[in-house]
Length: 481
Image (cartoon, rainbow, N blue to C red):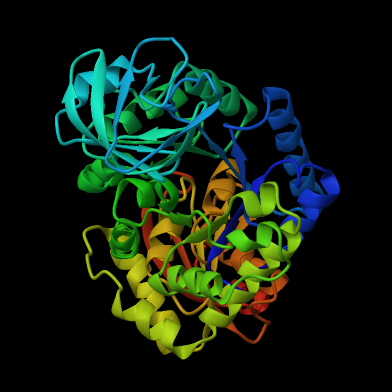
């Protein structure tokens, strides 16, 4: 399905968006990738949504990416005798392993690995950071704390530990079961929650066994600190600003976001900016101006994708939320300032023949009257490198691999077309011209740039660049076999 924008939209599915009619409408409104949140819904419900997405894909003949988001280890307090208690500033409060229902003085924290890592001066954040506790004394079985920010604490509230790297595996037993289930279904991207180090990504990659690309969610200070290694180990990144804004000072998140987006782009790996982008649209058909500015800011930074969470999963206006993101993206990308920002932040690193080919393709397209860049790709690498260049013309990724086409739906500016296996370069040029005309990017009177690799259908062989006419009669007269 042709898009008149480059940034991609990821929409989370849930109770508000689980029917064929709604999922199709969301895709037609602009959703390029659907997120299946493994924290919510049974395997049966997830499988049904996956089945519907693939049916929509077939009906519309439009590759759709599916991202399964693993829950990750959830740290929670135990239960209270009265259901909840009020913690006041300056008072003492204990967390321990005792299963006895909690009081105003203490509550269970059934995670001995946290106590093993804590030190006096460490902080514990409860209920998305609304309650802040500073550790004054601790052992392997308890932590005595002073309340630095009080409020209501209730049963099973989440706990964040921002100051230390916890000896926790990024994959819980539930995550391992969900990983195997989702990979067996045939999802395209696997999002890994609460990554702390590159080894977390490598563990997930080994379990996935090549069945899905691995996307690391950056939501802990330790992930920011070790980001370069995590990026190198991952196929993509999600800047998950929810927990990141809890565990770090909220004012530090925007510059971190900007820095991570640029690093991802330089590495030619897709990056999603996520969390609370259009939060008010859960209950309102109109976003706030601040939310529109937030989405715009991520697009100006050069992100590959922006994401909707509860807005499309549980909100009252899922289609309106997707349409709003689409309209914001179109508006930003038509702003001359957008091109200035994108081109000023372009990475100049060139290390391989493929790097040089895609850079030359972008230069030719921007200095002559070229209507599109068509790249034949087996693994998707050439299309990813072309996307990194952020060219002014559309990118058409031609691939015989449906899985590659689905994964590329997350990359900036890439329009995916399933093409047959190739034997001759002339065939590649003809197919490119046909695709450019069919998508409405070019007419017979126009020219396109075609990149490919010989031998065909082998990853990492990009070595040809051809400026070609879209008139097939001219192709057959002038192109070599």
